[in-house]
Length: 378
Image (cartoon, rainbow, N blue to C red; front, side, top):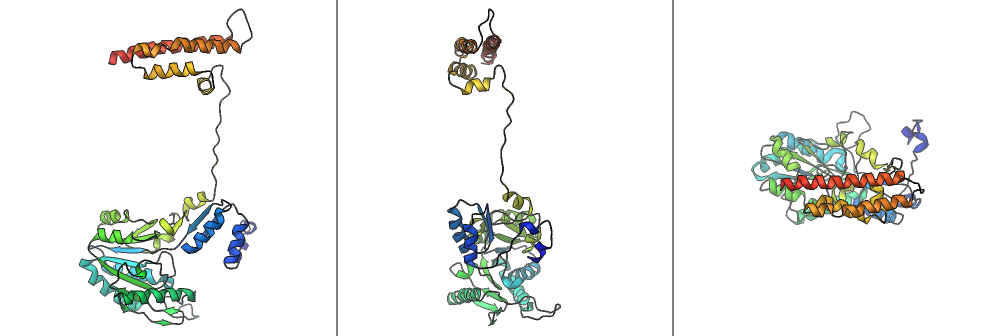
């Protein structure tokens, strides 16, 4: 708010309102030209219902359950390092956090071993010192702690194991590595939004893709492998708004890159030209030329010109020379009669009449020429 107010070009146009859902409801009720929100899927559904009452355009960037796929030829040291970091960055409180890992069985054990070490290096605590050695701080919302506890409890009851972490002190949650997970666990289905990293063994990349897409979220993902063509082929099968190969989260830092999700992870895009365009409305403007003495498009659009339309259709689509030309005289007569009706009586045919007769003659000549050419080809 202070930053916006310090910029003269922005200050008159930006207002910051503090409050909860009641304030948000009041904003929607004020019938703005457009709404955009970043938040949870459930909140977006409530806003969408309210916005629909007034047909207010609504765009949203919502949560995710971002998958990480590790192929056989991946750099496992890098995958373990940045996968762990991607899960714990900002205590996992980012919509693009690594929330689940699918590792093909041939490298699964080696990846898990490296992740055990990497997760053990990440520290959580608080210190006012700017150069503190802690990597992330506490969870900001105690309600999210209850969600995380419930997900871990459900996973453990269904056979999962915690290899690293799992402890909690106040709002601080330890970096937690979970294995032996399945898609029957809420930990692999619902957004966690905390420093929890579940790793699942899969048979091959096909199973990894199928499981990665087995969710109502579709925000972003990462694919790890040295063969870039193969990694890209896998990435293109993922039902998400953005994919990064051999890294995690960094795509959000590219300001020119459109960011947004599929499915229930949002509608619309932030960043780049796509974001600017979604805040605009397009208008089409057609400039017509001044009326001509004889305008074929105008003639065909108005009643009373069926003979002309019929002649043109048969000229183009007639199956024989006779069919192509037999309706031309009626069209010429219709044009002549219309032209004379709108003309001032004169000893000689009016200008409109002369134009109509000229067009009719050209139409007849064109029909004959067209028929001869087509006839020769046959």
